[in-house]
Amino acid sequence: MQPFHRPGDTPVHRLPAQVKIVTALVFVLCVVATRRTEFLAFGLYFAVLAGVWTVARIPPVWLAKRALIETPFVILALALPFVAGGPTVDVLGVAVSEQGTLAGWNILAKGTLGVLVSLTLAATTSPRDLIVGLQRLRVPAMVITIATLMLRYLEVIAAEARRMRTARICRGHDPRFLWQVGATARGIGTLFVRSYERGERVHLAMVSRGWAGAMPDDPRPVGRSAWLLGLVPAAVAAAVLVGVSL
Image (tube, rainbow, N blue to C red):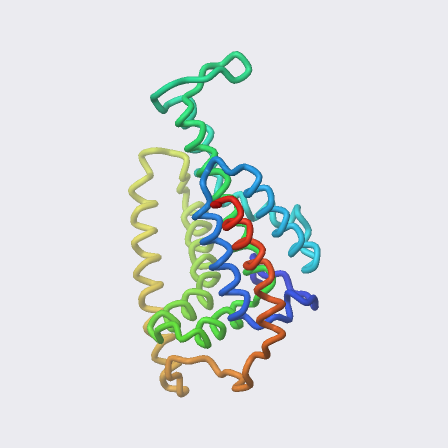
């Protein structure tokens, strides 16, 4: 089971993977290129994403739970107004740095939108389709191979780590104790060695079965209508960026 993929039969799910990858890339570039003081623009970007979620039938709660991955950056953004220097302004009776507040807002807005775009792409595109989409976009074969192995065996390595942790606890190991950090470090080293060895065996098995660095693909070209429909969010984001830049 893939934690970031949400199977469905919606217009967004049915779009070719390469179209969604290009759209996500253009959308993120527009967000990054927007000045941090253009607050309305960030609201419009979020509205576009909300429209995509509605069409793809992705519940906001499902996205919110997985967006917690950016918590460290949120903490940094919230701390900047209090630790940065420069001129200060009063917010609810508290003096905060003006530059720090803008910098924190910049990290929070752009980081959150970037994470949400990535989650939307992952939710509507299976891992295999993502690999095929990158392949159709002429991404180097070595990158395709690395991404294929990573997506296929990330859960296997995580399961191995959980089994090793359970075995250590059954033998009296308690990761809460500071003096047992050495055992934890050795466990991480063992996991790395096991993962490396398993990766070599898997790659050898793939080559023995005819793996040539490319996923089987459908040779049929993507129609113009699919590109026009899929690039609508990117076109709207580009229009917003141009509008606020004038």
